[in-house]
Length: 309
Image (cartoon, rainbow, N blue to C red; front, side):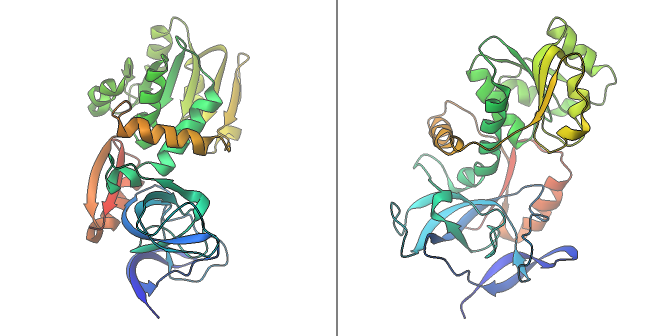
């Protein structure tokens, strides 16, 4: 049995992750085996584990690498192709490994203008940003507040919204304000200050058209920033804990089949330099657990990735 190195959860009843030797993942008829060159670090990577899987279980939801082997029903991709991919909740394991089994429909070509590290930073945050903007449905000249604006999703939302002519305000710690303004943010507020919702409403002349609550527990405060009849979209799944008021609406982001095509457009825009991609840190494979612990603090600037090469 061929083995590989992987960061794996050791048991269902423990959150422990260790670097272990595990079997190379088998691939199905419509799957490929990817040699992983870099993987993204997400706050849920430790906890996104399917039910009923065998342990140790390699963690991780996104990565980039080269196609090493094809299942018999796979078409449109060849061995050696550079790809980005997602592996969320697959029984064979995730991306925090030397090799990953990936459904062929979860592959996206990695343009020559992007590194493997850049490719690994995009699949989860990029799709979440696109789904957020789709749910918000904003037009040129409208206003948006982003709670948790300095992280991977927020950084992309700022750039995409600004490129569409949407005026964006956002919250983060004071040390990230200049960085976010560089992405296109017009107003940055410090969530440590008690009066920040009032600052946002005053900037927008009485309230914004919409708010995006990325971090858990930020939905209710985000609601304070929108005008009467405005809308709040949540990313973290806590929309049910937010009570609409003043004619507002509150909803969780959805998942649209059209996102895959829009994601390919986003990748090309980043490769051409039209949209910025912020990578806070690139960690070597040996320091992946330090990267995970840092990301789990939720104090991020852009995305962290781990590079195997």
